[in-house]
Image (cartoon, rainbow, N blue to C red; front, side, top):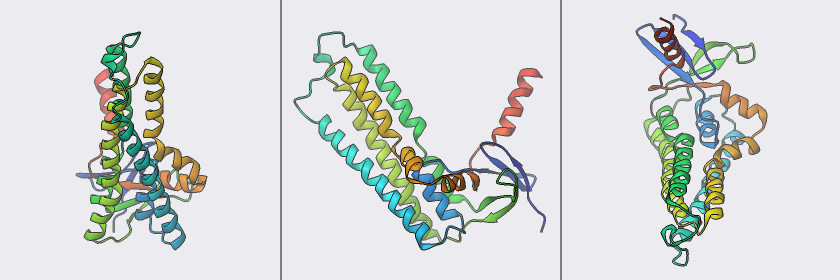
Length: 242
């Protein structure tokens, strides 16, 4: 069998077993959802302890985010909270729009359900770090053997849950900002919602040891619809400098 040709980059690895059909490999998102995808894909993470820890952290993350979203929705529906338009002071519509835009941009930029969904649905191989500490990638191995039904279940539990929480937070958070009673509350609420948006990343950093975090980053999973950033950068350089 002809060995795959691999080019390592900071954000992705391109392997080509057939020159006409390049494959792009990328690390899963560095959050709890990416950690769950990595545990599923990497065959060596097959111990009961690894699987238990992954399931526990995944459901802890889902529970925390769901509780926060629920209470934000309750506060948003509180009839005693005045609308922004009813407040006659330094509060203005421009600042409201700016804060909503910042929150929405943070939500969209911090989402990873598209990436994890593609990996779960279509990934077939994973790049294994070489003996030199993960800098070079010497082999491309198959991911953990998974039936179609199990892939659907993983997609629903990981990607589906993340999407539902993301959409709920986007809608409830926007209404929560619009109903902020004053200028100070608007700014503080925007900062608080931005923090809540990245709970999965905070849990990834605080609840996992460095070795596990490095494992998620080093083992790169096939990303079927990704664009190789190395080729994109080279094309941009050629356009600029000829």
